[in-house]
Image (cartoon, rainbow, N blue to C red; front, side, top):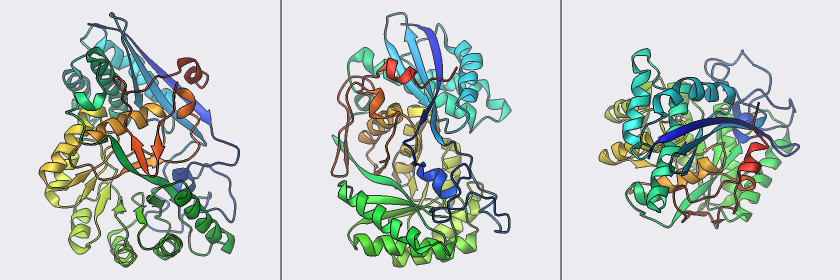
Length: 409
């Protein structure tokens, strides 16, 4: 079997009127400037030092991503996704102009070999993270999809076999509220927490990193609203210095939080190590880009839960390596699943099913125009569990006509 075509499809889909993706609402600027909205203000407040304004990630007001379609000479088609929450045309161009030339005519059923060829093509230029790794991710997932379809088995079987038929998920996510926000913003926080519980979830994540005082008050309100048995995770998006993270972490320990995700910028290796030694609270990281970075963080003792994103951290091939590395250190691993299409969710839950050290997986519970609407049949997510699709490959059937309605020219 040979690869005969690689298509990169940048897509962009509007959210429902009034909806804002939680990451953008928590930390981004590209959103409505409402006084009572949760998260950081839309304006760039450069008086806040050092990290809040330096770590304002770029977000789109739409759901953007890059879909990869690989066609073989046998007629088998594989689907993948390269994470592109902004500028999906950039990722698509990389795949079309550089990556496709490396793979046309190659065997699609050897994804590990093709991964090394792709990574090696830009290794001496230092492309160990970012657009290149995201492009690799999309192609890699499509290759795994083809490989599993060729054998007529779900991806989880090809990845080593299922440890579970369903994966526990947490609702992602509630934007926290900054100190000094109007009272109706705090009341909305309570309402959102109750809504998540009413949908059957047993755990949720909060987007914090808005200032220690506001973060702790936000978590305390959700804890009081949902009670002591509901699991709360937190994500600070790398917004804090070490002293601030220590103060925050000690407060979160008192509130019985499940983990503190990304408290420091990813470059702060020694800071993560010091923080983990000081706190009893588990430290998680979704700022995971490759196994070598994770090796250094694990050796430093700076992380307890690794969260590789299959559409960002080199696809299924590299995410599985990262999870296995975590397991060798006695650490948990779980896919990071923020914003993306149904392909992202399907690949993530197939990986999670096959990991012995899987903990609880992220699930964006918002109305996703690139989720169920682009599939022939919806996912089954009930009572806080995501049932692993049983079909061959990713286990889902993509409605290509529905998908292409969102394609950018």
